[in-house]
Image (cartoon, rainbow, N blue to C red):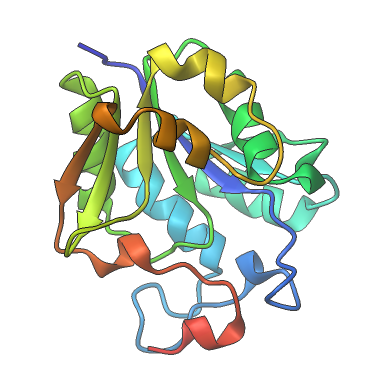
Length: 195
């Protein structure tokens, strides 16, 4: 049974479609955590469940790094963040090699409920190799990986993230049906912040 599950917040993107650093953009009025930066809201949800979480940031993202450190995340700078999400994920996994598993949260998905993150972590602790939430039949985030995937995760490169790994191991994925539409809601452009 995996007991040491670590959270990894991927916050090393460049927000190319958003037009500015979206992770520092305040959540709109009427939303949970209104006025709070997007990445900070995502970090709070992750830290509530997995207090020993780390955040992967890009070089020269001092403001974001300080914000996430102040929230309680250990921060790791991904020197090659411009290569893409796979490189950032590999950096995060290599920064927590002692873990029995990792729950990977995207910093531009601030609407995922802590209970959903908790369900993914519990599935890993119960022996799932890969765990992910599903909302109305569609797989979402975060995705949890057991330690057995360390070699593949730590060697990721480019912008595909763990998509290929998931495609190669569909039989290993435990889908957890949740009532949390936040598992599908990422922020790529300003209009994604509208309710």
